[in-house]
Length: 92
Image 1 (cartoon, rainbow, N blue to C red):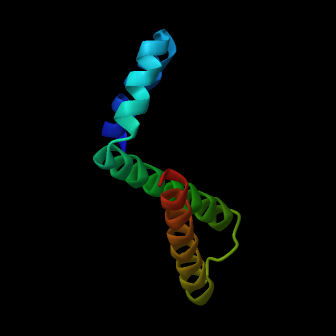
Image 2 (cartoon, one colour; image 1 turned 60 degrees about the vertical axis):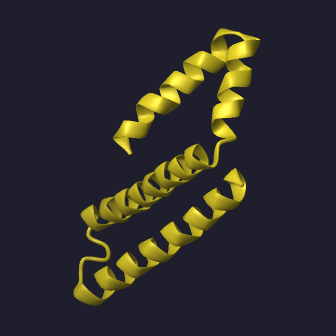
């Protein structure tokens, strides 16, 4: 996830420099490998966000028991898969 931040920052800076840079960034994003990498980045980011929210709720004393903790883990994974599918649909 961290490695792709460099690519995304470079593409953002390149796209803001000129119309030609924007066209170049668009052509880079049109490549299927780049789309797959960005999809992986968004998938990891979505799971990281959901797991972080789960852990913040657990820090409040909720879902700390074994059964509720397992249920919240399953819900987090299911929501992460849904977010991954939505990110894939959005990118392609």
